[in-house]
Length: 405
Image 1 (cartoon, rainbow, N blue to C red):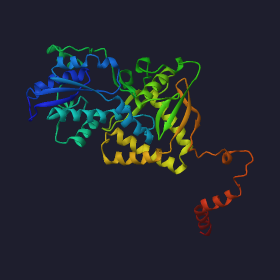
Image 2: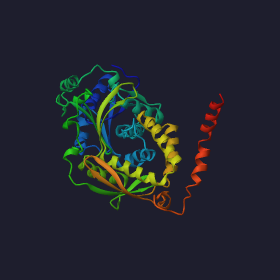
Image 3: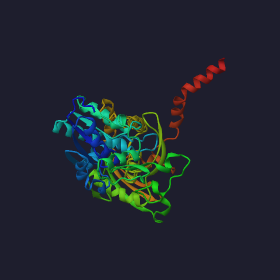
Image 4: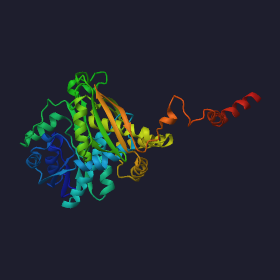
């Protein structure tokens, strides 16, 4: 038994097998300390939250706090990342990565409120989440101690965890049959483990939860109109809604048409490669809408800069550096670029694909008069010759030098 001066711990609690075992383990291994369970509602399946308070108390928690973070999550975490265009390793829309800092932040706030000495999470020693949680803890409350059971205990398997709870007569709905590890919030759901552990195995139907198989999606395309203001989605089909409600509406439409599936092998921060199936239906539609307006509004150099911001932001968010000055700096630049990213896009949803088929913006730099292939009176083709001569001047000088040699 160890104490380390810890009397009260706030645990990031999900009600799953791991955190159910963590509560009694903390009390046994940290001198009978008080454990307060913290549950973040970030839009996961409602059934996951039903009875979660009772479950935490039955496991030995002294209190259980369920905090609704859904609107804040989409408004203050997802939307700012969308403005940067961040995609980790080209395709991952950072669903788990964006959720961890808001969970950890709210957990810290509760710990300070109840006078806790320490914070605890159920992330394993192999994954990225331990870094994301603890980096946030350090940034917001460096004086609080951190307990990471997966780096301390000897419970190394699902069987061991189930036996541990059984010995202590703590009820659980978990079983050995669960073969996939899933993470769900309003933005996405991820699936790992099971058949996915071999990259040679094709994902089967059990690897997908939200979205319809694109082959079984409706045979007729569906159109959805998305309104964008300052790089943020503000309305769907003409109905103004909060960020969370916009996402909720687009999730239903996207899932119906099999939109937003990716099957990737990614590089974790800790150096391990992992494979996962991610579903982000509404988010994929949002990204397509924002890119459609950007194509009209941003000039070439601005768009290039936005792409560079997105690349950098993807690593900052993935690595859990949300509360670092670098993230704030990138965000400020992206927000400046997004000031004129306003307009309306019509997107076609069909068999897993989302395509922007109509787009307009009052700030559009697209000019039919200049772009036409027909006869026009606004562009003098002869001007192009002088431009090309200057643009290629360094190549001309290099070639002349080679000739002299």
